[in-house]
Image (cartoon, rainbow, N blue to C red; front, side, top):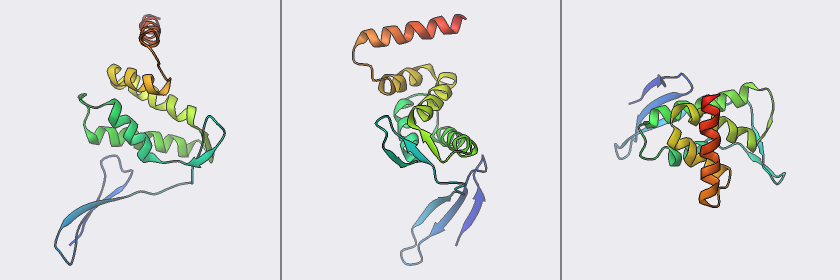
Amino acid sequence: MKDSRPTEDNSAIRRRRSCPECGSRFTTFERVQIRDLVVIKKDGSRSPFDRDKVLKSLRISLRKRPVDDEQIERIVNGIHRRLESMGENEVPSKFIGELVMEVLMDLDKVAYVRYASVYRNFREAKDFEDFLGKMVVSRHD
């Protein structure tokens, strides 16, 4: 038995399947890939874009925050579509990080600071203070 339907944001096909041998049920998601994206890292190395890395970093940032998994999936899909629609095959990792920061800033300030602390490599409390100070100043502009 198989039940197929598009996901809420139409970014994938959700298929509910069952194993013919054991009868276990499971869900698969099939996505159309427009182009192969390559990420250019800070050190100049290149690796294939991995949407699961973006998903994992968002889940860590949003842990114990009032954002559900479906919303996180929609965010990752939106970022992925935006990267694909740029028309470039190679994307700097810095650009991807900035896209994530942009989304988190509007979605959840705590997650935004959590993500920034790793992305911007905070090493001490002063780094947080400086970042939060800039955040407050930019909010008043």
